[in-house]
Length: 318
Length: 289
Image (cartoon, rainbow over all chains, first blue to last red; front, side):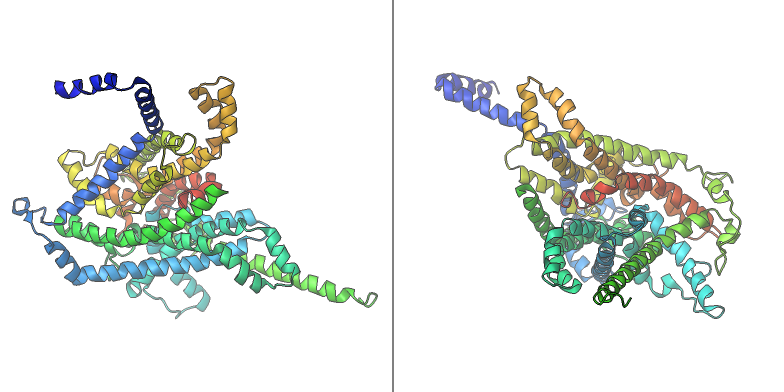
């Protein structure tokens, strides 16, 4: 120990003093610059990266929490089981279906609303505020609202309205039981459309009015302006909405948990992972499924990061 | 009409354009109201008695009552919601404070006095946001259990901090970068030292952005349910976990569900409307201004 601490000191003295001191000073200054960053960086690595390493580790073990003594190394056994398990494979399909439907529908609705809101009209601020409100409900509260207050077949608002409009003998569908996945999707679309609208509205507002004016003077119609000016300008915002929406909705747990509790083929991957370890106590299997979710998300994330970075570079260059 | 030869055509076109604009405004309003209808209905239902709330067709004009809210606050001998609300407040408020403490210096090192490779660091923060939380859930649970930290609100404070830190670093980085370097240099030439520069020059310019960032972090923590459900039980239960007790129907309970959902969403609605202009920036992780 003492030998190690002693050696650098004579070396520092022996070397040419001026450049050594300045190099040290430079290193010191670099660390002084880095210092404010370090707490946040270390915190993130410890809290988000270490658990993931542990998940990868556990995913190679046969480990049921109810039989902790039988824990042993299992190689790729969990992955084989996860990939060949019918229920898990179905939950992969459900996740894809749920994410694609919710993202696409809310993106289209969000685009329509953003275009409509991007004009001057009386009460525009209020209309915008009303439209944002669904996004500002606690997700569990929004899911409860749809499940009990809107979808309930006996006294829900949807069937109530049907009854009102069509009188006695109106159809009274069992919304959740008959269409479980669309029911979950409807609730999510309602919450996520405002998100898409906000992003696209920001995109529309960053368009230059002069360019549109010039095109109009050149005789371009509304559709031509939308097709050749607005859409190309919005492309990146559409991509961003799609990717961020996907990243958030792939991870959705609250709506599935609340509306169907994963029943009726609506269990998505996060719900399945939760159930595998929380109810079935299969730690190894749950971890393997978790690792697969991560791999799926990483593919999405690579694209998402690319879009964010291109917008970011533009922002910095400006 | 016949007095001028060319005017009718122009006037008619202007009139039809105005009609079209009016129609579009009408459509916009109809859609906005349609989106808001479920919330309006929830508010109305929360003020109805349980029997009026559960009629088909719906009873619009039923008399109003505060019973749903009294029920929510435990008037009928039910559990009081205050411990859960307080837990949510501690988890959200505590993690937001911790986020600020960690994110402000980090954002400083990524915007005003930049470390080398600062964009790489920024993207590292962002990439952690893309990892699904469910992948780390099990090890976190096992760790909390073995350390005797299950049902402990401070575990949630730490987890929510890690959940929001990337967003906060990105947002604050962009707010601090808006502070002109020339202003900072001028202050330094005038002999101001770092703390003075930060409090007198940087803070006033960046303050609205920092406030919006805090509100957005608060919203995300308040909304979180998966970690809260797995890691808390009785004493540290948060408000969204309390809401999950309404998942299975319990007879006539619509008014109570609506009252509870509204009361628990109230802080989020307030924070969200307060941060409205900066909401997009937070949600898009700072990519859109």
